[in-house]
Length: 254
Image: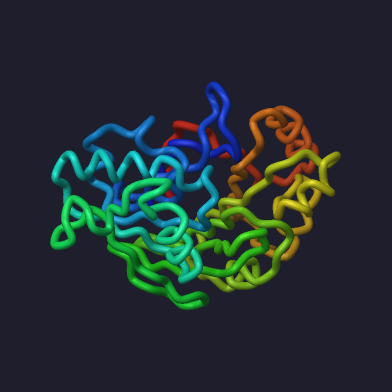
């Protein structure tokens, strides 16, 4: 599996992009950063968009991606997620108020956007991938994902506070190549992290004890830009050999 990182932060600031990843060129995981970093050819190659939840830092550039694809006359892309995510996207994002409803544009017969609901806790085929959504702990309906292709799998937590179910599933996943785990706030802001459904370095250490997969690399993402340096310092202090920090603009192969 090849993962291109368009953005990996839990906010936006100069030099810091919100989350958006290209998997094997065809699957966009999260839509916080797409059109501002990926070329028109890369955008046109996207066939599916997988969203963990509908907060804007995970969806805001999907708007412009669809507009670009419509102008190019590209084939439809499928926005996939749990039933709550798909319903929320229909109601709150593509509602003709926030943004045009591209599920009926350029025409009802040939729209640029389609939707696919993914049932929780089972694998569903999505293009070349198999995807299992697992509910996580966030103030709005949100899911993490186990994502398989022919060469193995990754676990992506999405935005979450302390949770259990995704770690139980990850522990059983035989072909696990990597884990992408959110860590948004420094330890001094644990109350804020709990209230907003996020993780600190100290909380991440407890989560990884639930995972208990020695040797599997864990890539941290979703750091708030204003606290990134402090979070890095606290992550390094954990002394966990498998722990890495996801780098914006990097390409990873698993």
